[in-house]
Amino acid sequence: MKAKAPHSWNADRIDMRAFAQAGGSLSAQEPVAGFERLAAEQHPDGPAASAVQWQAQAEMRTGLPGSEPTPWLHLQADVTLPLTCQRCLGPVPVRLQVDRWFRFVADEAAAEREDEDSEEDVLALEPRPSLRALVEDECLMELPLVPMHDSCPAPVPLSTGEAPDAAPQRENPFARLQRLRQGD
Image (cartoon, rainbow, N blue to C red):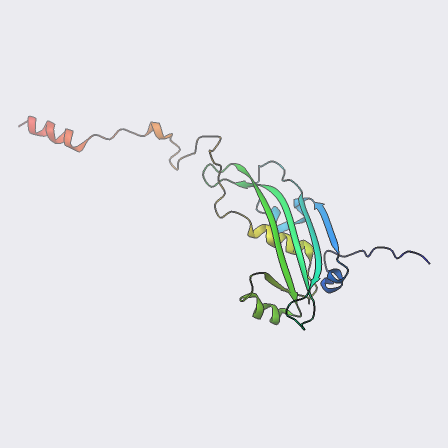
């Protein structure tokens, strides 16, 4: 009798119940360019982003006594992207890390009902989810609202194009008043 070959899982359209029942695990290291929305967030002149490293592990868990086991997924991802610093407008490397658990339910309606009351994220088994899309969604949610260097490497340009020290000196209005009084 031949040994059964390990199952080859499709990360773009995975049968999450079968994946969890098998205790499935997938991992990959993929170029950021393969994640179109994530790649669009990069600074245009920044250094190349690191590859997106991700892994997904599934398991079946029992909930309440007498209830049917439920598929769960542990997703981890890591990538460093060159984003645009909102202070100096130069590239700033930002590390995005994802470490989340997801519980799967029968359909979108059930997921919507249960997600609000659950601490974990609840997703639908159907239509079959894409692990790559889930990785991209979770990385996008990790983006900072305002990416900035701790200390910008170059002077921050001002809207007038002048350096802060080159601002014209304004005359003290009281000194001018003093001169007017002395002219009396």
